[in-house]
Image (cartoon, rainbow, N blue to C red; front, side):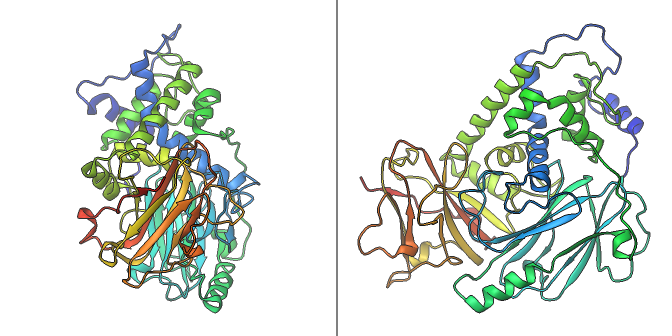
Length: 472
């Protein structure tokens, strides 16, 4: 990866786009931004705000089940997530999670991982830019033996030219503050196998390079701007401070148009790569304006997710959660709103399940998802369907603690090899409990998400889930 100085980046900003000019001079009286300008700022920064919230919550939110209690630490969750998890939208309920939060500023960080007796394991690493990397995956034969990986960024101090003794791989990130998330299929219907997987997860180790080599960590203190309860809250409260921090700890490529344009939009309001504090820009920040437009933008992305346009859904599915340079801004924006910190299509495909009448799901009604053996999801690992409330993307609270149906948690196929999954306030008579998703009767918009782990990419582009049938 190329490392660019601040002066190099801004020379490219000034020269790279024919119609784009950038003034770094101090303006005595900043002008108000039009809604069009402010909306451009929101759209180009939303992915960074969303991931700043997600990564910092994983590191510092004590109410999060996999909160690590700080940086260069790890935590594992040996039970599936339930309705109490509300730090991110649309978490899954079909894999166990481990999280290691990495601070790569002062020295590399070494992540040591065990072997797993599971047919699906992946390690995902993501910085504030929300581009997703999968350094390790069972899809590529990893996790059959223990492995050790060294993570660093373009700004990391003391990166050795050669791999340290005992380290198997090195991986360069585009950010200094990284979430490394482990997902493991627990095989919950096989108690002995599940216990072995849970034990293996407890052996994950995170150490700075100095600690790994028997010394003391070199990491210095850092002052983070507060993260927001929601992304809109950041726009309303401390957008400038958050984004100044983010750009100073992110690698931007002056050859990449999206990077050039986001830096240009930020510079107009005084947020410039490399400076310690926000300066006065050509335009002033109106927090209420940004918060209003951020909320409108989030709603528009929700509507895209619910679109019945199969071509658009296919494009987004194939481009979701890809590494930098292998996706498009529109898809990164979409997933930053509807469900940050997911995986690329090779690892998992995320597909909304629609209703036959074209209307959104609502808890006023009961539904059934019926699939014949030939209509089951095309996967190499496993699949699941998970129910959420539409507005927030959270699990539906229920006394049965039942939020998903899938191979991992158990389901019952019918005599023909197909399946009928019921979403209803009461379990229908004769329906296996494993095939039932409870709802709370009332006027609540719902969202059913299908996950295909290691989908068959030869089949996926022309495949869509069967629609739900409304029952009452």
